[in-house]
Length: 112
Image 1 (cartoon, rainbow, N blue to C red):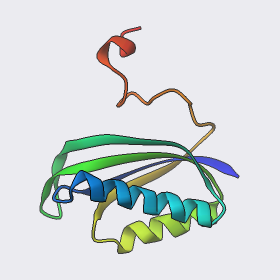
Image 2: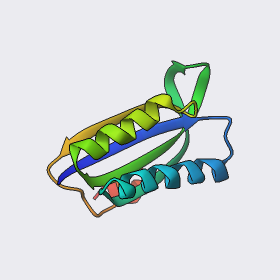
Image 3: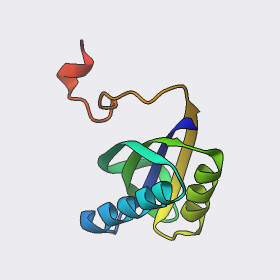
Image 4: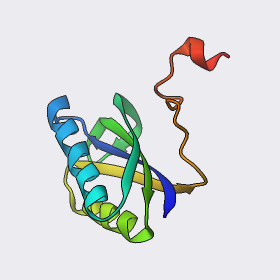
């Protein structure tokens, strides 16, 4: 199995409760196909750099995954057919860092 970092953006008009349900759904897809979600972070409702599908903001979700390429293909296909996911990016990495990502750290932690 390989390590991946997957970030996806969910449209702005969904309430936070539905966003968390969607992230649990995708976590379930990963686990059902033999993968493992090592790290999960909700980065909040953030402004997009440019408008995507008439959305100016989006809910950002980050997963650190240990999975096979087939699992990643299945998850990305689910992202593509979902009307709620407006953008996603999955990259392969050497390892998943257990510390919070830069998006989750406070400004005092990043200055160290």
